Image (cartoon, rainbow, N blue to C red):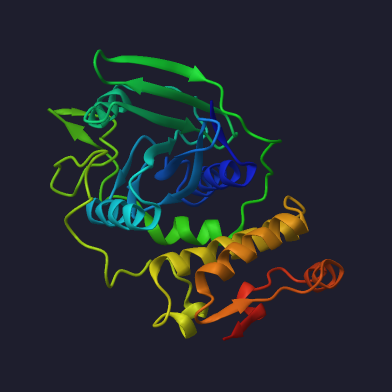
Length: 296
């Protein structure tokens, strides 16, 4: 079985919706981690986006960002993981285009791989490709998801999409003299391809900071690592979803506790009790999670 929590599935769909809204129907792509649980099932976790160019039919991930992602993920999660490539088709159908099929072959150095295509309507198509000893695929698999995805896009997700995604200089993609083709999702600026296995070596780990870090968080920018910053951003998204009713207080406190484990050396986030927090959020368009930051 391949499963995903509602929180993480929601996040992927919110990315897809935000790209449609902010970039006039554009696609968007990203990565996630696959971890095996004690029952032998594989769970999709920690979906994210990277710096990329997006159009109505393409999403091209920046090769250096992808290399950094692979390196940091290996350090954080260890070797017993797999990576999942996901991307959206805007508001279109969820299917594997000819270019998608070409991109998927870049996974072929591994024994098997998992890929996911979604759209802004929360539809999806999931597949597993077996590469060794004989190539084979299982398509249109069921993804175990709890409940449905809400309509409101968290502000923090929209901000990530705005900062990490951009339109190319020209939206016409030309390959072999033919226009309107979908480009490879891991294409670098010089058109070389960097697929599934790229990045465990190369650009290194130290000194990288997520360029989606909001300006209002600069007070901590010189202290926190990439993953600590990401944890706070995820907590901000969780707070916004609690505010619109799509997350429970228990969900929120669970994420806050995980984040506090990451940042305990510097401080912690201490949110009010449920009743007081709801009262605080009732008449506010947005509450910054760092309002609840306490220095160590």
